[in-house]
Image 1 (cartoon, rainbow, N blue to C red):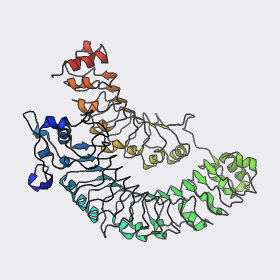
Image 2: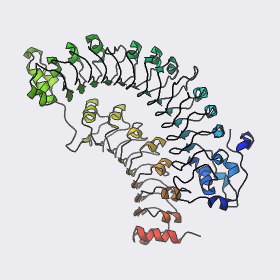
Image 3: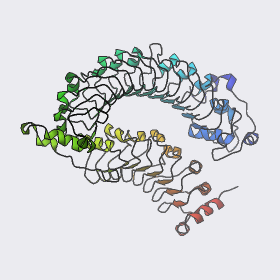
Image 4: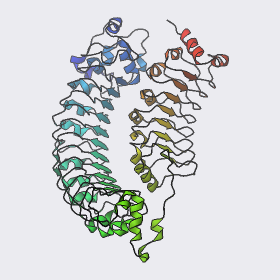
Length: 603
């Protein structure tokens, strides 16, 4: 349904026109039109807010103290008072609605009026259920329902959302996720952690494109074998549940990279058959007593991280040295009295934890000496004819003392997995890949997403931002200068901690809209691109931004309203084709230029 097709709108939510001035007087405005936490129960929204939403397609009402959804948002055409200054031809469909961090108890059925809606964020509210009309939004591709009080199953109509690729419903009270034999078929990321699920039923198999499934912190006691039909699954988190066994069919997931079964009630080590890519296997805090050799063998070519701490394991299998890619092993707090000597041949093993075991055959001073001392001790116990010197070599190190992975100036197109594993084990805080030939980053970089705060991808061959970057939730500094980027994806909105962003020397023709949503930014460099204009209203809303570099672009006119961005301490505009401010005026500094711009505003 087109946004302008009013005949199809719910008549109960068609609002009569109202006086714009009276509407504005009801609020104490801030840069967004009203103050955080002051809107309360839905009332008339200021006209400036409505017009802004109608022209940008984005409704942002986060943290406004709302207890219900403002009805105006469902019928913007009727809610906006038009006058001779209204540029109705610039109006567009609403594609993003952000109602997060309020006190909303119910999502009205009229949400179905927003037929063009792509992103719905209503996390941190008081919802207990969802209307079935939500299933009518066939363009919806991202939904965040986390941190509500949803205690009823999601409506069956959710299964018809064919555009949905990401659903976050963690921290609710969902008793199940069965959608009556129909599931959204294109979901790639699904987070149902911290709910009350008791079973993973066969319907999950209907989500053939599922790659990331988080079911941790539930009450799951049973997993349907059909889950193995999700053949694209890469990350499966079943930690902190009540599983006493997992179906053997799960061991045939061909793309599985990470399996987390920590804190369950497993008594046997899982068996893998067709899973040839598994890198991380987490089995801490279970009741596992043994690790059969036949269960270890299929993991020999891929497994890099194995955690089996706090179990009841009495011995490690003799073929443990076949895990040649293993970089991190935690067998602490078991019943081990010794370690197999051939464990010392694992050349990539950098992190080894064995404390909390009744070790009798390895001296305490060796154990206290760390992984290197233990591995050397084990190698020295081997007969000489069993020692392959190649297996004992040490990889070249690229990690500095300041916890920076420096792989710059190498002409490289990728970083070897063993180096990434070493970086993950050492929890590096920075990654420098400057001056290489990267055009993408491998999925292995996601291992670093929790620790890295600085990322330098400058002077490479990126034409689009690598998909792994928006997962670096703690990232504070991102350098992308001197690449071939033409835009930045909306997923960058997840980088809520980003303070510094440098996208100079690319091929941007406009300021990527997602940049205006990065409210933590303090320094933004967009120099040496092809940008023709900026949005001063959106920039003003970036209240922490103090440095903005727009030098050497195609800006023909500097909007006077830019002078209202009083948070800016440094504004660089030299090298653009505008006539005012003049070059001489620009040289007088930011304070002078900002005042000059403010004086041009027609009141």
